[in-house]
Length: 101
Image (cartoon, rainbow, N blue to C red; front, top):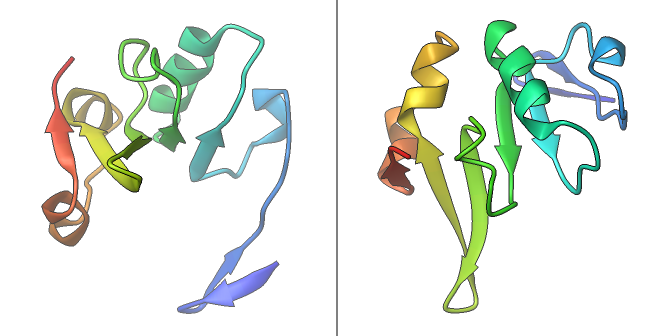
């Protein structure tokens, strides 16, 4: 773990949401389970979710990474983060594409 602007950052790997009780940001890589349920649980707990799968937005993910023209791009699902009662910085929104699936 390390401190960033006075906040402790801890990176954990888990296959169970129950192991992430104090999680605020969740990156979901390859997932073999019920992605829609994990994203629903995350929204209910106001956890900001990041992912990269094609179905990520359709299932309720918030920020998606993708490669376009050999560059990493970000898309933001406004509906998903507002349903989770989260706000995303205008600085971040300025460099992303806003998508409403």
